[in-house]
Length: 113
Image (tube, rainbow, N blue to C red):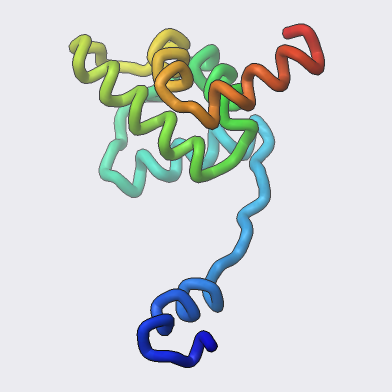
């Protein structure tokens, strides 16, 4: 069925799909630094340690969610004229991201945090 021309793109996407495992806290920090570097940023640490902790908690180390939350946090910081990302920027991004809110809520229910 996937050989039909109309479904070719779906087949292509399925054949190249793979799962990236969740990152640990140190891996998250390295991943964010790498992404910023590839985007052309070479300044001092852009995210505070508290922001990285909040990012890890909100994303559970899932790279796609890390990307979404970082993008939103950067937009919040830009809108405020801030030069770095702190915990409040990440929390705003989490509050604006349904998947991250669900993850945070689950952790709070399970561990009372």
